[in-house]
Length: 616
Image 1 (cartoon, rainbow, N blue to C red):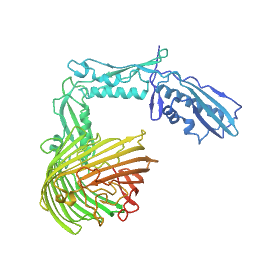
Image 2: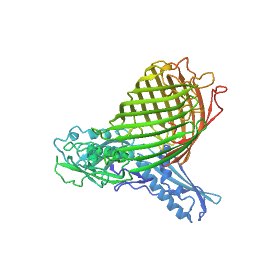
Image 3: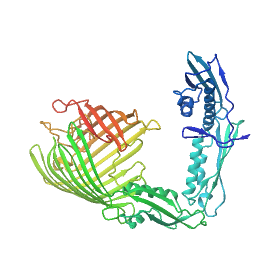
């Protein structure tokens, strides 16, 4: 058995560490006389074991990269071929093909030289062993006793010896050590043994553990307008507990997401020589960003006309990251004005006090008039995925439907649950403008009591789930699906205010149908709303270049007068195609939609939408 280094593909160039076997000398065969000079050439790679390996070979090939700059002579071309064979040999090793054979052939076709590099991959070597060699033992370190760091290493045993997989497994194992008291654990020089008789590979990675530490003080640098008390309350660890490197990233993401800082760096203090069990301080270096910002946006939809929004935000009102949002938003048929205040770390970490007030004027096909909503509540984050908020609300409205006006006064107890896609968000109001994988869930339930044409007592619930499946590593082809349902139980529909009923149709609902028009209507075609809602959407998002994509889609939905959509529900179906222009902050959306089953005299022949962000 001979010893070799394990090749690693880095920056599209495969590199073999010292001690690896060098590629065999290039053998260039000429199937026909070859001219002494080269005016142009073409290069082909044949025999690669799979598309992924072929793509790696192409990415490292100088023959392909410099095709438009041919060398002056055949001798120079042969040197270029020799360089490619060296790279190809390293790529094949990095993918587990340690016995690969390469052969190059040159032929002349008119004034063009044809270069073919033929690859015979041989057997793919498997991982027989992958172990860390720790430099010492530390009594009382549970991670060393239970060897939990071994889990990512053992997963590779019996699988192809791909360098990328090996390095990731090693990184994951070292991360386990860093998250369990060894923040300075670092790798040494890898030892790799390749057995050409059994076609397997054994790897040993020396690791220097460094001290076994607990959390010490957290020190902040760069603060100006932001109070240190807020920073300390945001720290997710307690001094004296076992050092966990992952909590540093959690804190960094939390501060970045606050919008308070232009840059955030969180790192253990540079004291790697402390004794085992000693406290290790954490340094947090920040650069404060602008506390105030202004936003302006615009949109257009055939069913709502032109629209726009303007907002002003202060992210550090009193020095403790208190956030105040003032916003105007409207279209030609609806206009809103609102203010929202948020106090983070209220009474405890990861809990926020939220207050809001909004007023809306509506003049839609369904109703016209004024309404307002005031809310106060607490929002708490659980883990990295879940956010729950609960509070109280007061809704007042004076709305007219079909010439009949009705005033409502409702007190509510809103409860909202959001599952975010694995990222650290502070607020459920975060808008996901272009999610490409995973899933998210939003559910709300609000019991109301009050007055509307008599006593009104009802429970309004709503839930939406979104799912995203990428079909390639770049996530340029994504299947997106949405399902939304709602129900109102309690008072009959006559005692549910018109703005609390369910409606469907429009750019964020069933495209192809007018705003609020997918619902029961009266003889004049006025939408009446309902107590049951069911909607679904399916999109296939194709990104055809860095900045442009196309999105065919189909939507369906219905609203019923009863709490559960069923036989009394007319389901509308719309379909169309959209174009996306991708910017650094998200996609600009243009959708053209047609109603599949329009109603004569009610639904128009098409709808057009222009806005920012994906439909869902």
